[in-house]
Length: 578
Image (tube, rainbow, N blue to C red; front, side, top):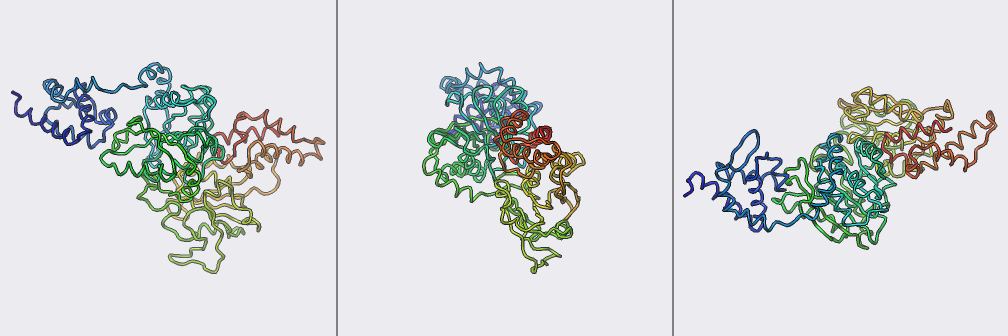
């Protein structure tokens, strides 16, 4: 007969499993893991795909039958046989469904080893962007599943966000695939770009903040889209809508989505899955716990894989869904669902006096306000505004990044622009400087922003835009914790043909790079024609562009959508081509 102190835990475990019927099998599988070898809590969550709280419930029930050492836990050797018999471990093994990807995964050892190296060196996760790293095995499993389900050779796969670096795994498994990556994190884009070059993969990277815009080159480009969005209803809806916007193949395209939720809260699953209904998407497949992560223990360190197909209704609904975008889509940080609305910003209702001094005091009347909650009126003190001053026009960030400041707002010159960028995750400031062709721009960013927090960041940003504007950094203004970035347009003729070409391109960030570069060369040649006696035709200019571009694949893209490391290289090539 079992000792009484040992019988109590096993009875408690049995009662817990009984309560979970018919889902008790997953708890029995967890017991198999505990009987197999010692493991820590994170490993148990990841291998079982059960929420952390459920795993903790099982550990609490097993209590005295567990051996704990150095942060790991396992069923004691003396009790393992009792658990095997009581909970049918032999039956579990005999009836466990085979993994259809097991053999292909074993054969893909080279890709797995490379992905282990790639993910180990990846940029640090940004918690405010809900970054949780998928395992190297998951990246390869995704690539193998996509390769075994769809014809990807000569097709275009769009990754709407790719912190998990799935694009690099797909490129190795299916060398003929053409891959486009759109992401807000420029560090990730540069990292993918570097590895794609090293591995000779066909991957193009573009910057996008899906709350405001999808890069032009990522729009209507793809046959298949993959995305792993923030696990909120708002994040799921937004990323899925951008995925739909990225499809070019409206009849036969598919959207593949990774989405995880705790099975302790099925309503969260329903809320996330409702994105498909909002967009008129037909559900074709769902693969349970397909992806595994280092973290995200609340959802079992796992997510399901969904396959959705557009219907004719999807295209009618898309614009309406995108027009109703929520900017707070994350689970953590200042841009989480619980934070203040970030399409505005709490704290100021009017343009602060320090910002106005940067614009009006220099003789540049403020005509445009970008983003934020500012009304455009001047704040001369707490609760006091200058109602006599004409309110400037307001421009949304999405409008600015998509098309620039409307021409009608720039009829009267000189003029200034004020931008409330206190919610900038990092990518906005540079693109505001590129998109806002004003005599002066005053942009307020957090003092911890990557472009202003130290001298190195300030110098790098100033060097990137020096052919267009000069920068000053007013730290601690308009309040502690903020910095005003003052950008003043360069006056007079550029000092050299190279600077003239770079300036031309920086002022036309929304145009196709190949066309803008060609026109810049023509304009520079015309300026020097009298002294050089040389003329340049459009065909000759285009030939120069194609010969001097180190990245011919970006000539059809827009400057504003490029990662900054590509912008720097492009401007060097353009300046040297004149």
